[in-house]
Length: 101
Image 1 (cartoon, rainbow, N blue to C red):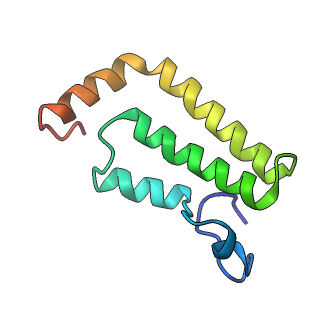
Image 2 (image 1 turned 30 degrees about the horizontal axis):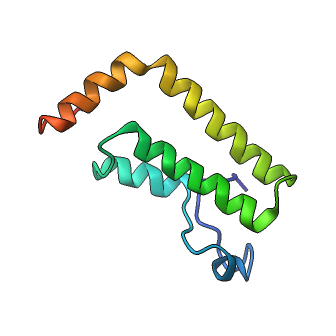
Image 3 (image 1 turned 120 degrees about the horizontal axis):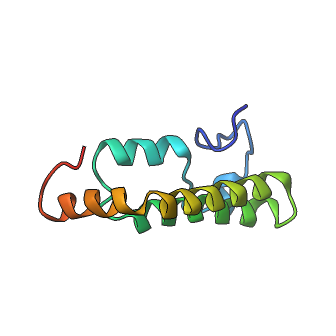
């Protein structure tokens, strides 16, 4: 099983959807990217934060899955900082109505 790649199914955790009201996974984020739903980097980071918070709610703060989600979010934030110039250019293109890709 690859963590966070796909939605949590009833088979994975029968009560997940009862506890987590806004499930999200990396596949969802990838699809939103392909559909150009993200206009700003903050929107992607918000979805990664949601994914981490969902794990926090469902698994608790000390669970290894939550810790991995936190590591993923931290990595994404570092990558955004590292690629800031490129991201600014892409965000500008999107604001101007360009495809950016």
